[in-house]
Length: 252
Image (cartoon, rainbow, N blue to C red):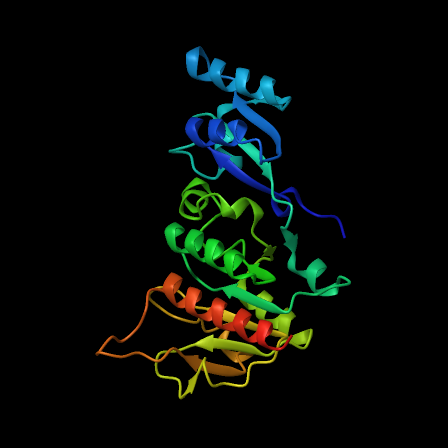
């Protein structure tokens, strides 16, 4: 299976994010694409930074840069493809020699700050995989990267088309699929959670989508006190991820 460039790189756009990527020695920048209309001091600064790092620069039409960046208002005529060493298509991860144990699936989470914080938290907790679908979830862009404090570049992201596709694929590979619901009877602290399991996080407003629900095998709640009804999805993800990994460590 040939890996698409979209499943190998995190694309950042805009002068400041691109310069920050070029100036960070920890990041492997594959290439910079600069609009052929970009001139002056700003363009020169990017060209000089790329030259210092030995990163190739491609010139392209302004429209081409906008299409590849996916954000015509903020690309400022430049983008950079940064290698994401732990990013893989979900299919390859599931069929590989060491499939992920605990997997998080993002379903309809469209706020970049939430996606970024979830990537940071799940990576920090030690989760094996975070499914970030290409559709229905905020794109991995500079806002997500900023919210993740740069962790998005090295997060164990697994890519696929939609959350429903991910849910069906995970179930076909023997993963039970748990979802969070404030009204679920089973608590994440007491439920029987096998080491090989997937957990889906629904959108900020609509929860788990209708095409993912049929694949859910169990519903879990996070106990709330003092009249608090629910947590922000990024906060709920943090509680969930660290509980999953705590149990994994306890099994050793």
